[in-house]
Length: 254
Length: 234
View 1 (cartoon, rainbow over the protein chains, first blue to last red):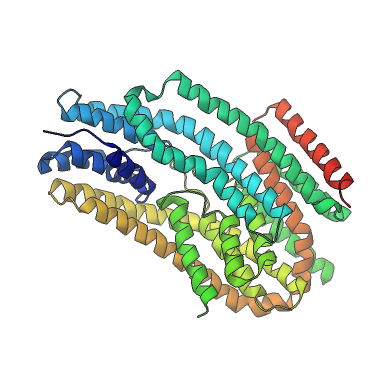
View 2: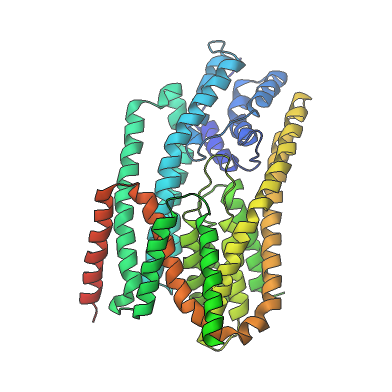
């Protein structure tokens, strides 16, 4: 007789979700990490070893989503596995369909929230603080905490949330909340960048030399122009600027 | 080998883990690792100057879907480590500025070279995943944990090796950088703001998403902050 998933098991899943991408690969992407994170729930639900191993092997198949929100999918999948273990759920094919649906939806939401909004926002805050207080580690702490606190809260809390709501977790209200967070982060990000740029022009109220201000403005303009196309990447552009700057420095000081 | 060098290598390994394999908390971002290295080497100004520029470049590099992004986790450690090892014991400010320039370039080159290395690592993981499924079906339950830890060990080792290679090259290049430090410091005075402005633009582009009202928010914040900063200065 299989047991129910308790809080301790959900916490263990959240903890293991930190290794979701440990063996990330092009073929199964997060598949191995997914099975590893789900293993505590399967241990509890399938006391019979052969059945448990069969389920584990099933879960090593392809899976990919935004890694923070993957916790929600893990919780929802654990709930479906619980039903399945008690003979009330579907088969392996329906589990694969559920994983595919959760993965793609959470990726669409999570990429916008975490990769396109929170990560640049945390970087902007960190850089601003680092420029304003260069002799302390506050910039690093600000960057880390702005990103890591919501990330870790969702990573651990998301498993329980997904488990309690089941596959219905991706309701309209959940999406609306995430969309609102994305909008507010973008507006706040513009404010932080405005302040950071002003500080770069005149750190501590002392305007920098006109050549430096011009270089900042040229960089901003060039960045906005090159950002319209994905390739070459910003790093390649920055390396090209570096090479041109070095050549100019050699010719000027030669 | 000094404590700072060993510490830098360990930070390289840990940054490679946080980048993709473990937790992904952004503890591997260049600003965070440069701060740690600045503390280890006792040179805040060189570490922060290098780390800030690399951070602004790293912020626009996103690991979306199956894309292999430039590896700023290891690039940040190599960049700051190279700058710090060149600047170590340098008595003049211009040598430290030259070191920051070389560090930023080294960091960006490492981040770019990290792409094929990451792809190689991910192909090794494919074999690991297939092996794991086979072992599980053969009844060996521990294979799942073993495969995970093997992947974690590989990621740590690659980060550590990249940091070691960067520091080795920096030690070899240090006398050359010192000799050319006046020219390099001159280039740093223009390249640092250029890179910062370029990086700000990448972030701004991510926030604007072609919405004019957000551009207005940016300009209003810039003008307002400028007035407060300049007028409020003693």
